[in-house]
Length: 452
Ligand code: ADP
Image 1 (cartoon, rainbow, N blue to C red):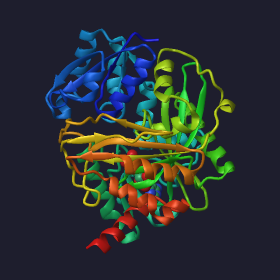
Image 2 (tube, rainbow, N blue to C red):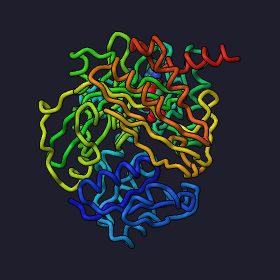
Image 3 (cartoon, rainbow, N blue to C red):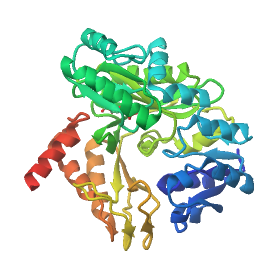
């Protein structure tokens, strides 16, 4: 195992990784921006190094500053967390070429999966179902039209280099297509420096269901079952649960096997997530792979009992996975509510001083957070301040456990979205497990409509 790991991140995920390191007896190096001097991750780590001013481009995205910190502190390995540089293959290469271990997948796998067109081609070849559409980028509106006619409207135009829900356009009829393609190309060029776009069938009312995979360097790949992530606003996940209330055992098995095949096809190592859209008739299609640890990883840890960050460290250090697929089972049900410092209905961020922080506790309630009473939430970064995770032996009990945990949670001084979660947990459709990727936005429009 490593002696010393640098965590190139901040907030709750830096704290999460520091905790895993401590439990393994690994020394930790935190890096922080000038806005994060008083942050929890800088306090909990064995060493903390300031890497620049508040704006992320000058600190958490500043590769030379991070590499200098690794050298000064004599790190052995670097964990990127999620966001920031986590999916930057060039950063991973620099880390490896500089002689550090990279706690993540091989850069080549990151590159293939980071390009949606290449990823789709690799998946098709591996026999993983992909959404019908163009085989590669479309050069002209005419080419797009030909494909759209063949697969039928509605279609979605996506940027090959897109991410974070950006660079997508839904087109419902022929006349709108040529203009949409040209717009998508110029927007993709401006946003990602790559104007390549492709066309695929727009699926109506799908669910977003993703599969956690874990792979070592010795060719062992296992899945840790799925997470249901359909409850999204602006493509941002709000509440996740595992397992999905929608899947039957047969679909689950095929979905999870497809995820393992996807990982195997790109020579994957470490923890990763294969995302699928699942239609109401239970057809599933690969959409992308996140080549990193995800925000919602704790719900998988709760239902499988496997510590994902511990195994990220162990496999990066060359250890073999000691469990086989048949050793991993789903135990009960878990849910995560993402608590953000923002208005629950206008979604305006609410940074500032936390006058009081009281985290819920009790049986099977976990809170991953970097907050403390007196902490000032800086305005420069993501508004997520905590993840409340509940585990119970079935979904109904899990909902009730989450409801009582949120009752106990107290955050004073800033506005949070807890009220949104309370209402969502009480919604009958949610309670029956009946929702798709558009549910939350439809429901919000209703709630806000009534309020106005
Ligand atoms: P990003 O990398 O930007 O997150 P994804 O490819 O993961 O993009 O897609 C994000 C979301 O967009 C999906 O969760 C889904 O809601 C919607 N989406 C993507 N592709 C399709 C499609 N073919 N049909 C319907 N919805 C889609």
